[in-house]
Amino acid sequence: MKKVLFITFIGLLAFTSCNKGKTFDKRQEFPNYTWNRLKPLFFEIPMNDTKSEYNVYFTLRHITQYPYDNLKTNLTIIAPSGDERTTVHEIEIKNAEGRLMGEGAGDLWDLKLLVKERMTFNESGTYKFQIDNLMDYFDVVGLVDFGVIVEKASPKKEK
Image 1 (cartoon, helix red, strand yellow):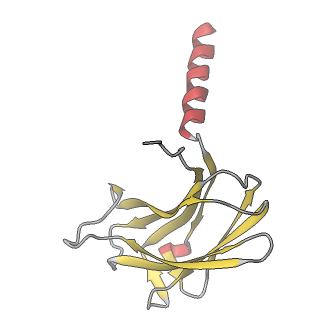
Image 2 (cartoon, rainbow, N blue to C red; image 1 turned 30 degrees about the vertical axis):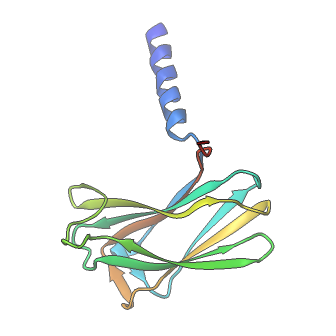
């Protein structure tokens, strides 16, 4: 019995330490591995901490057969007051030599891209993130899912 409790405790400790600082982590799957250009993605992120700094990441899972070198997107952040900020982001899928970026397992590849560093959320409430597909094609094939991670930034080191 003590052994089971010890193993459970170690498992819980490992699980909580892996999520340290992670405030939000959600993915949306694409039907038939296809992102239609006219269907933006939406994420709602509750935020009550207006003093801390956060890093915002895009996550992308795609298959080896993704036909393009990149994925162009818009990120629009809508504050609880309705204030909007939009930025363009290009996710590099293949490097200059044509090699796939990120981590691969079989035919699946995972990418994590820092899109906002040390961002502060100035208002308390729910922020809406809208991600638009800016590719030149009506349907972009080869995409499994797309996600957003928001995690507390590490404290700045003094020099």
